[in-house]
Amino acid sequence: RYPEVQLHLREATSDLQIEALLKGEIDAGLIIPPQGATFPPSLTFAPLLREAGFRSYRAHGALPLRRRQRALRALEEGRADILLASDEWLRRGSLPEAPPAAVVVTGSGLPREDQASWAEGRALIHFAWGLPPEGEGPSVAVDEGYVRANLRLVDRREADTEAVIGRSPGAERTLVFLPEAAEAVALASRLRERMGPAVAYYHGRLPARVRRVLEQLFLDGRIPLLVATAAFPELFAPGDIGRVILAGLPRSRMELVEVAALAGLSGKAASVILAYSQGDAARARARLDELFPPRARLVDLYRLLREAPREALVWPGEALSRLLEPSGWSPPATEAALEILAEAGVIQREEADGRWRVEPVGAARRELAASSWFAEGVRERAALEAMLPWAFGPASAILQALAAPVARGASP
Image 1 (tube, rainbow, N blue to C red):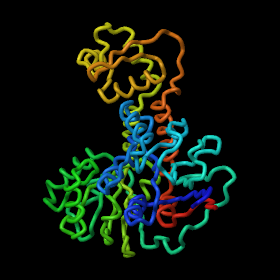
Image 2 (cartoon, rainbow, N blue to C red; image 1 turned 60 degrees about the vertical axis):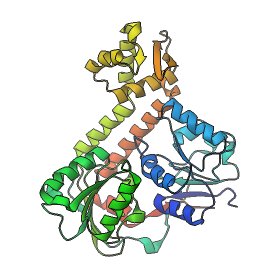
Image 3 (cartoon, one colour; image 1 turned 180 degrees about the vertical axis):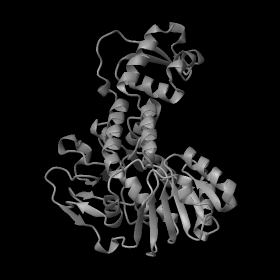
Image 4 (tube, helix red, strand yellow; image 1 turned 180 degrees about the horizontal axis):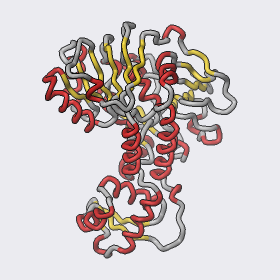
């Protein structure tokens, strides 16, 4: 139906894509890429997809082995309607020969040589930020009528977040963004101490029924100030949000633009306030180190494993946790590191009763890039470092991205 179509788009609203699927305007599955360290689109969109009745699965390097195997089995048996997958996972040829998706949506656009047989005869859509792929034409406007002339950008970077929010909710309906659910809950709790029940928090891990209630209360104006993660869907956003306050650093340019786009959807004047700081960048790097331990930390862990008593090499296990805790290894970081070392062939693991027995392999040099988990971490760090100069650069460049979405070299 769409033979060999390639589109390079600057902006896309995934909630509207899902709505189009529900209405039958799109008769295809989607592969939606990750945009951050913890695969946030899977946390954002997977609940919506499940509630809509779609059989959706996640697939990326930073998933435990069992979950990846479950997704592959669903694909092979034709039980997956929508797959949320990373470029790195696709690039490694992890898909079966005939996946269910008729439209493949990637984050940066896989080069021709990395497109496997499953890409033949399918529409291939790239949602790409930054420079267009080599050989592409200049940027062109997707929709001149969509230019957001009603937005005002206020630069309060490095300012105190709670001072920016103010002492009371105010007359304007306000959405405060934070990247992590725990941060949203903590800030909302502090604000409620002085503002009362006018404040609530929202994130993708809340039960579906609770999220629906919060969405309706915010829509009705009974909650004038909502502290939310990127899980808050545009589909349920009131048109008269007067302020969007970015109190934390978004994980990507796309996330920043999609959150900011919730301001002034009705066309009335609205403000987008940048209130994140360099401290948020440091916390983002720390989160990546926790989820994707860097090479130096992996070397230290391997040394500790080689020196540990054999009976302690069981994970999860109290003995190994006590052994690693003085070196700063948390359970999530330990599990991620063991996954990387096992994938790279640095350790061997044998599963029994839901636990691993770990054994370090000989001293032969191993390439950590053989681990898809480690490769995902390299990509995530590169994406973060590439985004930071823009996020902390001139506010005029950010305003341009908010006001005038463009498509790069879109061509049939």
